[in-house]
Image 1 (cartoon, helix red, strand yellow):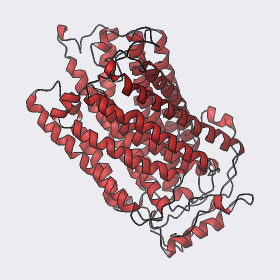
Image 2: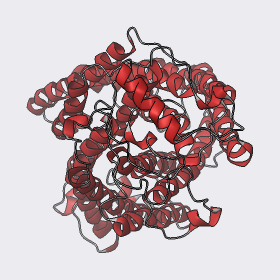
Image 3: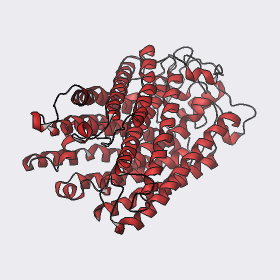
Length: 565
């Protein structure tokens, strides 16, 4: 790696202005594509969140109120889960990856720009196709779509559901191939694998999972479509098929898919904790290798979703692998805690969400280890305990990381910093609303409340009222973020190119970056997490001279306190 005295590389001090229309057209600029991914994902987050509010409204009482029948409720939670997984979390992290990976590598763009754009433009029609199913006999089999519910008891919308997921899977595979080639071939001179930012490591591990696992989902969906429209019987035992075939193939994708949704978030957290605690990352190589370990071991645990349908002799091996995969995750948790220890922590909105991730994801991890135990899982199978675990991992984990990433990289994307007061209000409402929405579901599940039902035993009404009220608080929190984004884009003050004084390479160019990111070849700092040294302070000061903050922006916005730099 180059020393601090090496040139930083040239870049424009101002980026050419973008029009709103630029984000509604075909573009091969990875930055525009990244924002297109994220804006589309946020739209579907609002859609999925609205469906969640309807679910919690219905569950305020133990009888049907909002829905006319159970089939409508089945559709509600089926589309909600599908949207949140396939049209919110996965595309949102793809957006972060598209925007940041080339910048973090000092590259001009992704390896295959046209393919990058094509992968994005598969997503809007897939989302439209999924929602159109509501009008032709909607999917009612849940996001897992087990036969025979998905073959015999759902309308034509179930076929559209499968076709939509096919398009989304193709998009994911194309994007993952692009990431792998970009990371392999487009690193600058002096940046070996062990100098890559941990977010890039996370995207690499995620992309490997996508390439290896998503074809299995495509195969399962193809068989499902054939059973529905061509008269085959792959999943019909009465005609020689096997309903458990779907479970095996589906979960061989869908458990690794959990890490597709979580690993990028872990990469985001690694960046946030180091920058906002002004501390070198603890256990860099351990964190990087643990991402790869999760990518590998994740393929050995799929059948723990099937403990109730497995023969007893197959349960123990999958229980063991389910426990083993907690080890690399634990390595990350302890490394992050080591990073925080002794750091000069700045409680920015981004840092608060990173800390929120740590607390919520640990709870989700503990409940996951519990469900990895055969006797516990059999007792709690298909109860609200599983719903709670899933949301602590995917909302308390993935979504908290997304929110933290938005606050951290918004200045890079738009040259403006989100309002910190609104950000902290957003965090407080999200943290409280989330915890009291999903933690009580552990209790309801242990007491025996089944999931995916609209009519439940009246003994569970009181706890469901608490859960629903908290969920409405969580819904309100989202509007605080949206308001913050809109107001900042319209009237926010510009900030400097590197308001957080970070060392990773995306901050070594203007905010927002110019068309091809850098003019000349940027030289990365020796250690992307080497805070607290004289060299890092000199490097950051040199960056600030190259990209001076706007004259009309106050010092508190352009330069954070330097103690510990």
